[in-house]
Image (cartoon, rainbow, N blue to C red; front, side, top):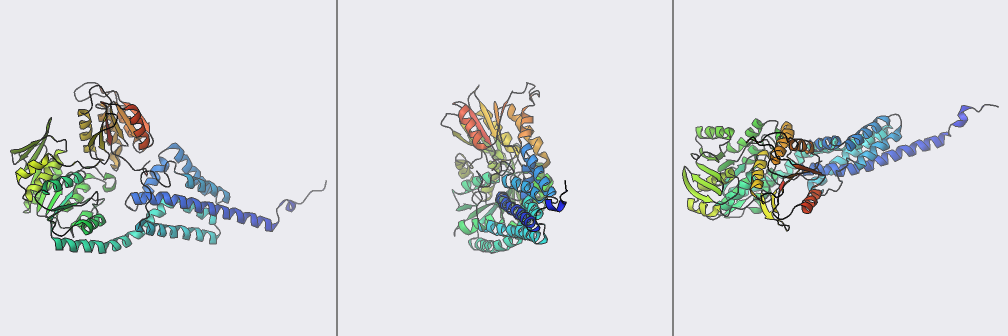
Length: 538
């Protein structure tokens, strides 16, 4: 039989070119669609994380490595990218993974949907330009599928790059609002009370406004408007003519932010409520946190400090040494300028050693004491302060107590996210509900604690085991650490008794946690919702 030349088995040149071109076009289109879907996910993360330049990449790492399924998907996506150098069709695998994953991170979002603000539209436009430029360059160079797959996989990094590129523009655009706010402050000329702290600042702000409002016209910055742009908005929209006291909450994610805010919101009275590991992930150490918070004192001659923390005690000494007027607040030492002692039936308030009030109130003593010191410094009479203490407002979602339709006591502490707060919340849980009934803790754990996060969450769960009957763990972020802490059942309590056996329930979302509570909790039971994380967390 006569052999057939090999050339006869090859497709005609025109057909081969058409087939190759069609495959390349299909791969590029698939990658572009995947990139668009990925962009919606990671732009939402950037927005929820206040456009920090590394947020999308940090959360991408958490999501892709947080579960076996997502880790396997990431390996498939990387393999598809690598193999596409030899066979372009392999990039379809990368596109599929990017379009569908990471599993659990929704495109639209359940608890924190994407909001198309002017800033988000600007960011999206810059990001899209980066993506389009990369893909177009790949197509022109003949490496379209490979570059398109790489661009799809690199969406979080390019979102972060876009945040970095647009940051100077956003600051420039905000300058005019800051300038307007600064001018308004100069014209209205209120006494400015500036409050910062790792935790307790929002609650203390509300207490100050309440204690002072009986004798002064007061405006407090709303909600958590505690950064440069938020405070400028608070001043421009809320500071009315005739306002006598403006209470400004000041937060920070890094050194220099509070110093910049106090350059145009000059505090007459500066308050630091606490130093703790909140945002430790970003600062690196509690010493750097203390330094950043201390910036609030640089332009103020009057200070209120909760000096039970040795670092704040040292700051108080330094302020006094340079001629400043300092109020030392304590929850333990009656000799402090203001001391608020937590007792079985409420709080006892002492001013320079003299008892001025006893009030049936379940609140953090340091926050109450700091607010009282501010009110005294503003000239509010002790009798007026004492009369208003009993009606201090509860900060929303900060250990708010309600009774559910089932008859169970519900403690809403979903805005709390610090180790000290968890101890107060657990102590409160121990006091409510009926003996022998369920005590349930629902939590995703604590975040942004850096290297301390696993140990702090394990400690939290272990302490919960001494009080609660059930621990409902929400999400994956801290599940391993919480379960490990809850399982330390052989440990002994401080009084030498055996640790309480705790039933652990793991759910994926807070909606599932709420459903579990409704199905299992009845009259006489107590439920503590401790912290909450938006759904861009795993």
